[in-house]
Amino acid sequence: MNSKNLSKEFIYQGLALLLSIILIHAFYVSIIRPEAQSFTQEQNAMIAQDVTYIPERSFYVIVKDFEQETCFILMFWAFAIMIMKTQVAVNERRLLQQDLIPLQQGVRIAPEDTTDYLRQLENLPEDQQNLLLPRVLTNALSRFAATKNVQDVSTSTHTMVESEADRLESELSMIRYIAWAIPSIGFIGTVRGIGQALALANTAVTGDISAVTANLGIAFNSTFIALLISIVIMFLVHQLQLLQERQIFETENYCDQNLITHLQGQ
Image 1 (tube, rainbow, N blue to C red):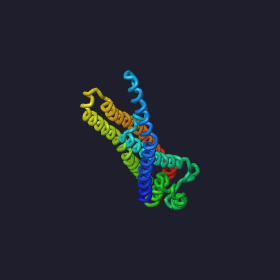
Image 2: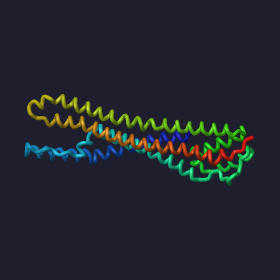
Image 3: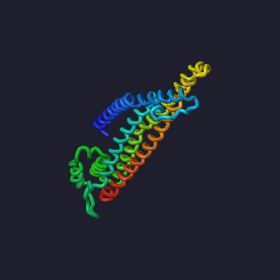
């Protein structure tokens, strides 16, 4: 991947994070927290009227705290990154359906014939030239023109594909970090909630346990939401990794069947 693509990816990830922060925070300020406050007031009024009343649970109350908001921001950021990488993988696999080097059955490619095929690859749109398959085919043809050795071309192709697989694997580390960070943020909420509940233990002695239970709700709700989000992200990361691995395998197989088997070494 060239520096231009890296810059585009960095800008995309930065904008995706900024947009996630703006949208999620706006949703929390306009809907989540007002609804949670209204529900809590309603439940407190019901308890005041009937001490035996069992409070109901509300989604808004469960997700209202800052830790859950942060977890959702990171979740949508991870989704944006995975959508981008999935689109790239889909484009790569779509290119595998095209006949980039049209050859009849039994036709052999000599080293002096590589120029024509390289020119065909150079005529592809720029966005397609940056994909893996055209880069591997270009490298294979250039290598064959220089070495005239089929085995060397096969080894070079395998090395390049393996290098791409390693790069794709390393680029998933950011999403895996997000999946690790989200439960950690949930545990921060747990520590904060328990700490605040303990600080209000004296009020529980007087018979008012509402403040203590509210803070214990922060403690357990934050971890609950964080773990759920982490499970979803890790499942999607696994599916994305499978898609990328199939793309790598099919690219190498395409090169073997559509190019290397047609090369005529000297």
